[in-house]
Amino acid sequence: MTRSDPGAGTFLLDNNVFVSAIKDPARETATLRLILEMIRDKGVVLVGNEFLAEEMARYAEAFRSQTASLLLHALISKMDIVDVQERFTAACRSIMGTDDPADVLHAATCLQTGATLITNDRHFDTIRDQGIIEVWSTAEAIRRLL
Image (cartoon, rainbow, N blue to C red; front, side, top):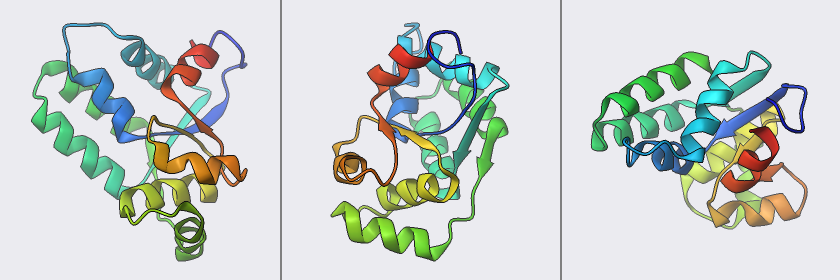
């Protein structure tokens, strides 16, 4: 990472960040550059869960392209897949106010690992505002990490 951080950090990239990078493979978006930099940087740890990996695979299939396929493979290869403990899931479920199991699981993954969640999903505002997990928008991640 070049801008504000010496290159260390643990992050979970929400699926909406991945989709933003692959939906128009002809465009080299800032989101695509962000993901490529996070994959390249040895100081960055990516975490996820099985549900996130499955979501990304479904979208890579839906947005079929060489970019989607290569990016999916690189992300999954770098990602530490976390077996989320129920206590973290229960804590996040009680705070978030959403019934979306994916969102709860992603927040619980971050709570368990200390990861920063990068997302544009507003379902994470409450848990961020309460200081339970750190949540960055994609624009904030680009600003801080590129």
